[in-house]
Image (tube, rainbow, N blue to C red; front, side, top):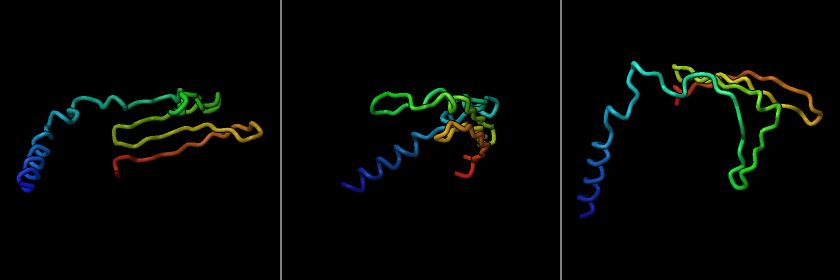
Length: 92
């Protein structure tokens, strides 16, 4: 009986994946483009934790799965720091 149930779920899992689940090659993924940070929400209180400095940060999502971020932060004294970083999602 356990094997029958396991077999049913295995077949159902295989059949549930279709070509419709992927983005057609002639369409651009909706996340591709440049995005600006608007908020960092603390889930339990709904409080926006993003400072005026951090809201200047931008992230560019590329078609190849890489992300380029220009992140602004400040130290305790209020000195502004700008950092550029890259991350490639295609590796994962």
